[in-house]
Image (cartoon, rainbow, N blue to C red):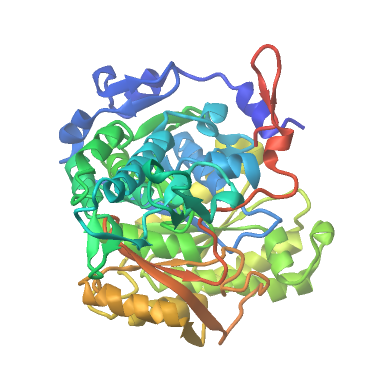
Length: 556
């Protein structure tokens, strides 16, 4: 059996201008990065902005397990299936990060015969967007420390610097560092920190900005520190905004590539750290909607994280209204939630399936709370049995969901036709009454508690003393109307990664709260969530190599 990278390397790609022409994009509106990648020009939006929007389909999943779910594979396969049904479809995905690619997982290209290509490029430097974000982030950090060194006219308190440096790599030793060591000319000695690039506020800003001017305004609002009087100091006050925008002027343009079956894919932005959990950029999603009948986008991790943020942050900010949600599960993952060890997942076990399906049940309920119709799909494995599939099908239909098996990993678009037909049926027959979970007017605590109780199933919320102080300060600064971005582990509905299935009446622990004023949300950190991951004992990088002809092996 071929590996994902072997399948991708064996693919025959079309020149990206041919892929673009299939959705009405002319060569003049493309900025080529070789033969198979291109950025879309700013001028294209002006040409298409008055077009009628296509339908918006969000792909999300149950809580991830070591058994795998396959959101991106499903998203890509569904797009390919729509093309086979003569529907004009575009896939809108996030970009992967080098950190996870070399450390803890593969890439974000899908798998099997449902992949976007060129896969190696996407999982490496792609078009350089993440490098631009890293540079803009660290320019701001450099200007901040230089300001303190050169007289500190803004009276920045070095003990209250909140802006962190970033790097697109997992590197645990950089989480907590000391800068400025040496002599007087080497800067002010202070504690500093690194986050992975995808956790930078600039990543969130890039993804949520409507255009270059909006990007610039958001960058200027970034709070970098507090002065000795306890007042916020912004990027605008450091006069860093113009230079940061210059570094990002190309990065904000969406990237166009193709699937193995030449379906167009807009791959842009990648906040899957604790920001928006795998959401594509607003610009890419909006552009996709203007160019097609159906836009398929994805939100990372389980629906408790990605889908909730997609609905409550991205849709609120960009005035998007999803028409349907595809909820991905696997028989194996549901049995894992029912207590079966990973090594035993290939065996039929209806009892474990019945215990574990409560995780799926909760995610169905959560999506329905936003007023959007749900289609459940099972990413099929050869070890799944008819009895297991039938049980899940009946379970979903009893809860008002359409159901379809997906075989896109093995069969590409052909294996997704059953799912595509169910999605089309849902789009035609079921109306979406989309609404956010909470209103802007609620207090920050009320918003946190709404998410914790309604989406996670918590019974109560406990705030660390530092979090209590931070919440009060954020509201006193006038940011109480912003939405909440909850940072929580992806493996459980709770903040305890070991609690599988459907835990209930637990306590959510809020340890830290901070405002991302530029991005436009307040981040609440729960449990032990990391904004700079570390490498595992055996990093994914150990298995990656290049031969004398330049052919890459082991990547994803």
